[in-house]
Image 1 (tube, rainbow, N blue to C red):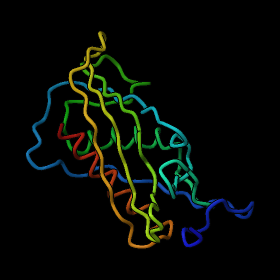
Image 2 (cartoon, one colour):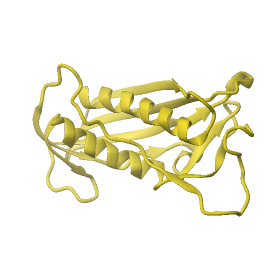
Image 3 (tube, rainbow, N blue to C red):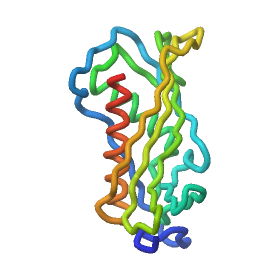
Length: 182
């Protein structure tokens, strides 16, 4: 893990900040829905809600990259990226964050279950795992319309923080494309 830009670093200079990308193109065959969607900030399990970039050497251990951070809490960043993805792809008539949204037809609720770089089985190059369990509910009554698990794994090219972030971006893009198409 020492090649991973150093886990559990020191109190030196300010950390490098990273963000991820929203979808810019609609998935193939996307049919635009005529309704208004509100997206809640996802909930998260374990230590994944932080703005720190999680690394796991075993399924039962969470550590963090030293000296690097997400620009904001992972759940808040993902909420914003989902809103942007629905906007950019034109998947719905309108979309907004749940906290500021007006009247809506549906609410998208998600739980962030995996959002970490994994170094299982003594591997040297991490595989990023992103998994969101998503529930679409009718607004007002909160009646569930559908619920699905969306997951992607992408192996980074190297164990450096910038390359691991690229793998996070690719994995999250795969997951968001599936969510937007659902």
